[in-house]
Each structure stands twice: as structure tokens, then as C-alpha cells.
Image (cartoon, rainbow, N blue to C red):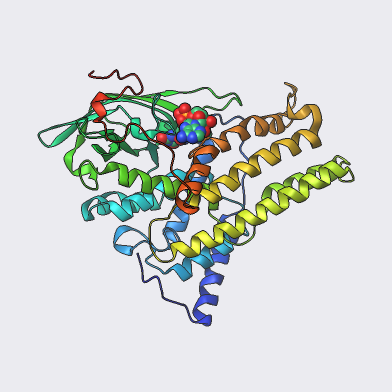
Length: 413
Ligand SMILES: Cc1cc2nc3c(=O)[nH]c(=O)nc-3n(C[C@H](O)[C@H](O)[C@H](O)COP(=O)(O)OP(=O)(O)OC[C@H]3O[C@@H](n4cnc5c(N)ncnc54)[C@H](O)[C@@H]3O)c2cc1C
């Protein structure tokens, strides 16, 4: 990363702000998706055009080194970019995992060769990346994963299954964790790899969601070959890296891509309430004020988290707080949508183009309390690692993985 302490002189800062504003005025004009987009192809295509324009203008990957395709600027520049971006429509909605999680992991733990090969294309969204952690028997307790990688000469051979992999069907690469030594205890003997999503033996199957979307997938690996040089970080230390990536995930979900105080859900629902004559209803007013307070608090927590990241360190357990706020906002907005829109929040007519958006947002909102780690897990992390409360009792941490009954594995399998 660039010199984190560099402060810009006021004239330089003003000039950079004007440059960001000019770019955003031209390119961040917002968009509406024409017709159904259950697999997010159309939205991603729009996001890519924006991001590629930002890269061409030297405004993508602000703090990443120019030698790896970043803009090579400072944290001070990034703050200005985020502040200006925060005033514009979000143009990078489908890039959260690729940029918020995979990119910082590659930059922090990748080798020089890996960064040279992959960083620039990721930053400019010429390639899209996904995260392959969860398995049918390993979600909250992801260290119970059973996907295995076995070394064969200069290649790893991957076998197993992942699930809930967001946007895998549109991705070029992904970061996968697999068990490389089942003789070790479950939090050891795991390694992290880069995976070519088009490699032979990778089978991606869509999962149909209750809201009509098909954004995430199951993935099956059958003798998938991964070059040895695509291992990220040390062998059998993938759990440490996975934990770091989960922290990045919580920060990405909890803080978003914008800086400053932002209350988009409040603004949207306040407008709906006014249009529907519900803005005098005391319950709706109370709900709106609670939502405003929650979104404001989330913004302030996000600003503090980003300031902590200024030190250039991997985010700590404090990121769980932002993630928890995001889940609370989803829950609050669900009640309010139902209160404000009535039957439209649970059903829609087939002949109208617009009436399904409220019911879909209600159905979709449940995922915010699960994706990126459930609310209960965030509370465990905050209790344990922020507040210093006693840890959950673990009975299996000293047992070799091969002797555990996890997922479909029986002891001594
Ligand atoms: C929209 C969406 C997108 C996702 N995208 C991805 C992705 O791209 N890549 C990926 O790898 N995964 C992804 N996931 C998976 C997600 O990370 C997991 O669903 C999540 O970690 C929970 O795991 P699980 O579903 O197996 O639930 P489980 O772990 O089985 O949990 C079931 C319930 O038990 C509770 N529970 C479990 N353990 C504890 C405990 N120790 N203390 C208290 N309560 C506990 C949980 O809170 C939950 O209520 C996605 C999920 C969603 C919903």
C-alpha cells in the first residue's frame, strides 16, 4: 500500500476532489435494469463498464500500488474518493466480494507473481472473483470443511463441494479453502488457493431463491487441478487467512463503499410513507426515526472502522459491529415496508412491473442476518474478542480432524 500517513495539502486535496467529482458526474449516473435479471448479469455488466472507466481514469484501487494496476495514491486520496462516491448512486453493487474481500486478501497475502498476474484485472473488474468457504456441513463452523486438496507434483487436486457461493456463475476466479492435512486438528491443516472457475472439474449449479433470484450456487469439484504456485499464504495455515478474509467480509458488508453519514433506506422509506399518506401514522414515524438512528450509527461505526484501517492492518473483530448493524437495519426496514405498503409487502400482481419490489425486498432482507456470518456469530465474536467475555466451550479443538464427526464425515472415515 502507499504511504498511509501522507496528508495532502489543501490545494492538492481540492484538485483531487474536483477530479473525482468530474468523473462521477459523468459516469455515476445511476441505472435501472431493463426487465428481469435473476442472475445479476445485466447489473454486473453495468458495474463493469463503470469500474473499467474508473481504472482508465486512474481512480480505481486508489491505494493499491501502480505496479499492480492500482492508482498508487494515499489513504487521504481514498477518503476523498469515498466521500464523493458517497454522494453518487452506487455503481459497484455486484463487486463487493471481488473488491471488498478477494482484492485485499490477494494484496496482503499474495506473492509478487500472484499480484502481478491477478491484481490489475481484479481492480479494473476485467475479472470477477468469488469466495468459496461455506459447505453443506460447514457454515458458522467453517473450520469443519471437508473439501480436500492433495498435492500431485506441481499441482493440487481438489475434490469436494461448496455452497451458497455468491455470483460463482459469473466469476473468473475464486478464493477457496480446503483441507490439506486431515491428521492435524480442525483449525490447522487447511490451506487457501486461487481457483480458475472455468477449470475442468468445476461444476456450478444455481440455487433458486425465494425472491425469484438465482444469485448463489452450489459448486462441485471433481479432480480439479490447481497450480502449486496458486496457493495463498503458508501451507496448512489457511485458517488464519480465512479468519482475515472473514474480517474483510464483515467490514465490506458493514461499512459499504461510501464514506460519511448515509441513510439510504430511511430516505427511501420516508418517501414511500409520504407518497402513501402514511407519514402521520405514529408507528410509522417511530419506525422511521429508529431506522434513521440505526443507519446513522452504522455510518459512524463504519467511519471509525475505516480510520482504524488507516494503520494498514487487517481489520479486527470490531468489523462484526458494522455487520451486526447491517442485519438490524434489514430487520427494521422489513417491518417498516410491511407497515407502509401493506399487502404489497407480501404479494404482487402479475400484470404490474413494479409491485413486486416491496415483497422481494421483504423476502431478501432475511439473508442480511445470515450472509457473512449470522447475527449470533457476530455477537459471539464481539462478546469474546471485543468485550473479553468467556469463550464458547469447544470440545473438538484438540482432536485430529480425521477423527471428528463433522458434516458427512464419520470418525475414522
Ligand atoms: C445471501 C447469502 C450469500 C452468501 N454468500 C456466500 C459466499 O459467497 N461464499 C460463502 O462461502 N458463503 C456464502 N454464504 C454462506 C454464509 O456464510 C453461511 O450461510 C453462514 O455463515 C451461516 O452458515 P449456515 O448457513 O451453514 O448456518 P449454520 O452455521 O448451520 O447456523 C444455523 C443457525 O445456528 C446458529 N449458530 C451456529 N453456530 C452457533 C454458535 N456457535 N453460537 C450461536 N448460534 C450459532 C446460527 O446463528 C444460525 O441461526 C452466503 C449466505 C447468504 C445467505
